Length: 126
Image 1 (cartoon, helix red, strand yellow):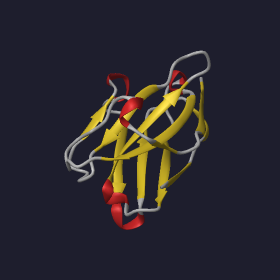
Image 2: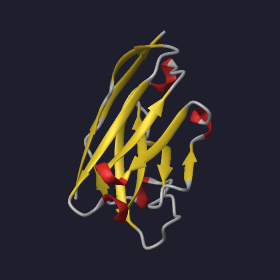
Image 3: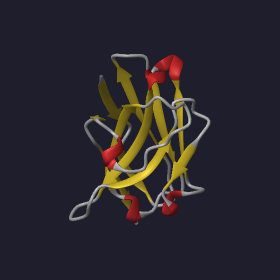
């Protein structure tokens, strides 16, 4: 499976971006999906995850109410809609996927995912 992330860029504080993660290989419904980010000098951290069914999601506390993860299995794509962006959201964002037997599982650790896309830079100016 291959993952391709896109949609990053430079935005002012308070602005919005939508990241996309396209999945090739097996049908995307086979995979739970997640978004992680890594800022300079910091460890990679979980941002949001979505189950294979799309009915269960999980978010890092700092992004709850501002970010929304979704998926469109017909387009083999997962999305991260980011609103009310803050300078502290600046990071390289990466999407991840793994095959789980359960339809409702959401992974929150990088160790939960075997497949990773390249990162896309998000920079939020103050």
